[in-house]
Amino acid sequence: MPTQPQKCHQFAALHTHPDAFIIANPWDIGSALLLQGMGFKALATTSSGFAYAMGQQDGEPALEEKLAHCRVIANAADIPLNADFEDGYADSPQGVADNVEQLIKTGVAGCSIEDFDRTGKSLYDLSAAVERLSAAIEVARKQDFPFTITARAEHLLRAEQNLDEVITRLQAYERAGADVLYAPGIRSLDDLRTVTRELNKPFNMLGVTIPDATLADFHAAGAQRVSIGGALTYASVKPIIEFGQAMINKGTFNWTREIASSQQIRELFAAEG
Image 1 (cartoon, one colour):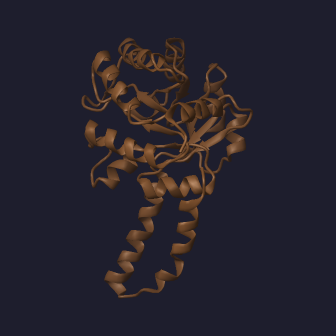
Image 2 (tube, rainbow, N blue to C red):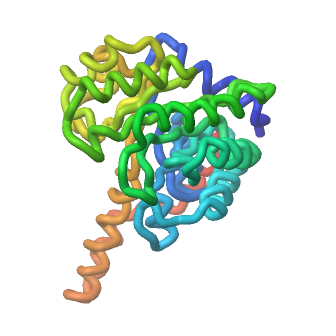
């Protein structure tokens, strides 16, 4: 099992590699090991997927639950894990710093901090967002390894489709020292190009918002990293609903012909990251 510093160096290197990469989003240990066994080079937690696994809505799990979740997946996986750390689980910059310090101790290789107040249900103004992000970056820089901080601008998801505002925020986060920049909600490759050409740091693209694009398309438009949020979680939920309805409504079991084999799962679990 690689050490946390080794994973952190591996994760940082992926963001400077000539090729873009997909960072897959597991929601529990089993899905993490499957994705690792398939050959993904890094993983990221998903707030919505984790909330589903806890029987809760996105944003409801408490800080201690999130830290425990990150710890078990980071300890189980051989490849780097990035944490979707939402709004840092605190309002004040000091609170964000304290919580990021706890998060680093779980063994993850990086985290994202967003500029949306999950409690107040509103975007932080830019100065407050920069202060909160800077507090997280300061903690990261105190480590003996490169802990990657992703600054996440929520404007396109939480407010109007205003690319100028998104660019302004991302540029401010870049100046604050963020390692990676992220603006979920971009819905065209042209918009992605518009954003990334104004930035100098690696950009994370939420791939599910342009489902017909490929990794190569995203990279050509300026993205270095492509994530999928809770999409795999909900893709796995769909057959549970469909097959469950088949049993309840029809009493049928022919859906079992479509399930993964235990041998295939064992092989993927055993594969090295």
